[in-house]
Image 1 (spheres, rainbow, N blue to C red):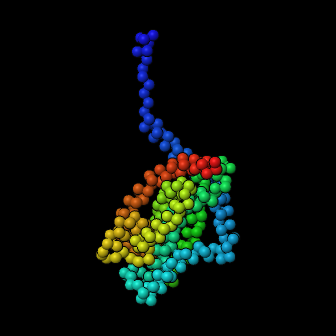
Image 2: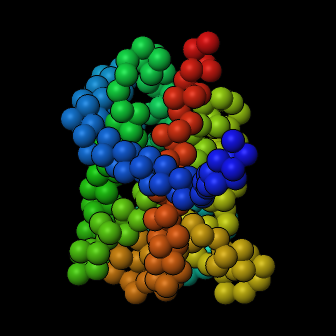
Length: 288
């Protein structure tokens, strides 16, 4: 018996390989569910958009109010001489409105995963369906609302004499980069935001602060500590590159922009896996 025991080989397990394989399987399953749930996501988006504007007297006008209001405040302050802003190189109303519009889209893309998941709280624990459908639904709604705002921005280009440039053909790609960045951030904060309502308030407060160190309504100063903050701010290349392509200017932070997108791609995959693992656990905890 002792001899048999000595000849038995020891079992070897490589845990790292198993973990990597599991993560890849989760990521593959997540992408599969994103593709498979497109119809469900579309139905959820149509339902939410219809309900959103049906219950409002002004309806779709609300899509314009936030960026227009913010832009007009800064336009008034600039024209009245209350504040002195650095030359933007284009008519300031176009600069301010394009910046506030892009900022509102970035803001919405960050909040979209959490908002879509929270709005489906009533069915998450009752119906078994791919949770990725909520993410796709949020992106559908974001694209719909953004398309309305972009149409108004194109009107601004014509009214203020900028017109259309060949760089507009590249604008959709830069625009998708803004959504990619915001959605990536949103994937990581959604599970925490589902548990603690304070997260949404912290994000709103933080974005309100970040707007003032991002060239949204004024250009980057030529010198000083604010210039350093703005140039290091990862939101700067997103806003500047996209706006430059809209108005026909040469992008100044294109390298930084591409580096940001390259970093976002693997982070997006990690965020999808994190979302897929955490949401069922959080839903079970909230329903218990």
